[in-house]
Structures are given as C-alpha cells and as structure tokens.
Image: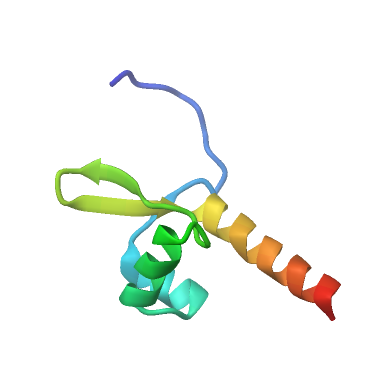
Length: 73
C-alpha cells in the first residue's frame, strides 16, 4: 500500500458498528438484515475480523431516505 498526501474531507472516514448504530438508530441485527437486503450500504472489510462503513456512504443513504420520505408525503 503506497503513501499519499491526499487530504480527505471529514466525511470520508470509516465508522465501526457502534457508531453506525448510534448514527442510524438501528441495532446490529437490523443493520445486517438491511445490508443483506441492499437497503443500507455494505461494510468494507478492513482486516480478517474487521469491517467498517464509509461515513460518506451512510450519510448519502440517510439523505436518500429523507428525500424519498419527503416525496411520499
């Protein structure tokens, strides 16, 4: 893996499951059920036993949910 001087915006970081649970208001089982149903962004594997979500992908999902609910209202 090479090094880079690229500065990423604060929204382009990884979040782990406890932070995701707090952010979206769902617990682990619901999150993984939604991922399996392709209703929530899938996690990225960071290591053999480590996964995380891209904060920007989760924020975009949240914005999409809000927008679809506003259109339905």
